[in-house]
Image (tube, rainbow, N blue to C red; front, side, top):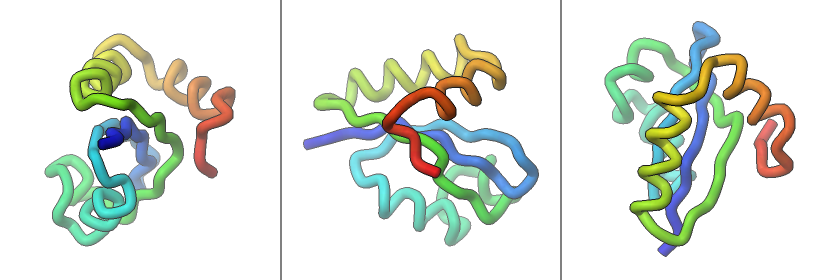
Length: 87
């Protein structure tokens, strides 16, 4: 099974990072108001970036690193410079 770390942009311009094993379904859940509490009040959201991993552990570790160790500016740079980014 493949796992994904993703970064969303909310309607207010804020960024949200999460992980999932089904990126399409998770994005739909966020936009249907059934995702994270943070995104429910900031709809709609759009996918800016994703990375694929072979294990849940790797994806969760990367999500934690992005959320806790990276500044907004570093996240924006990651999105801009990475060939895996989605625009």
